[in-house]
Amino acid sequence: MVYDCDGYPPEKTSIALHIFLKEWEAEFGISPRVRYNTHSILVEYSRDDKRGGGYDSSGAYLPIASYNGLTLTKGAVWVKIRSSGLLCESSLIHELVHASIWTLKVTDGDPDHLGTEYHGWTHRHNLLIQRTNEKLCRLGI
Image (cartoon, rainbow, N blue to C red; front, side, top):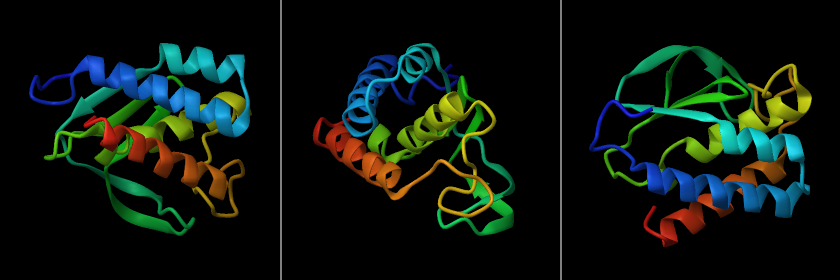
């Protein structure tokens, strides 16, 4: 869903989803559930500022945080449009990792990342995000 036509083109989102899935499968193996979820996920982009409580990447809880993206359910993510116009600089791939973990765990997408309250997120997920974003940036996406 795009409310701003100057945001991210759907074609680039499609390419990003494809590259994410290939990287996920190379790192964690083929999962029909992750594949189906990636093919059917709803991605919403907007320039809105969203704030609330949440966890940083180390697992520390922040009572007030400004979001760059949110995984709303395993099948829906919100991504803030960045001024650069590049998906590789957005939170898209990060949110797709949360959605994929949620798809596999069923209960949650490990909102505290490397923290101790939830489980599922590992350093391998961080490397997957970095690697995927680097590929997208090289493609100008």
